[in-house]
Length: 96
Picture 1: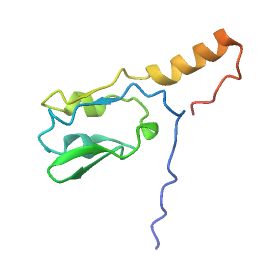
Picture 2 (picture 1 turned 180 degrees about the vertical axis):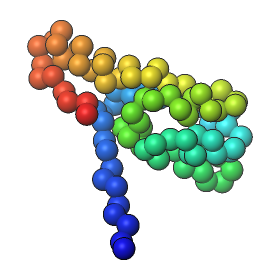
Picture 3 (picture 1 turned 90 degrees about the vertical axis):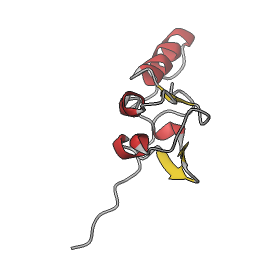
């Protein structure tokens, strides 16, 4: 049986609150291990962000980073984009 490739789920562009400090990263790989959307990958002994727009802001990476290299305000980016759209009278984006 062939394994189906999961469709990459993208969220709104440039609204994720994900912040990563490579200077604090030791390359333990916990972030890549727990991220449900494979936002992180390991290369040359460090974790790197593949694509911030894939982040669903669950916070698993930040909670599992023992060195404080990652921060994210869970669920804030998408909610913020919706609120700003309402305030500015723009089309309300779909985050799901």
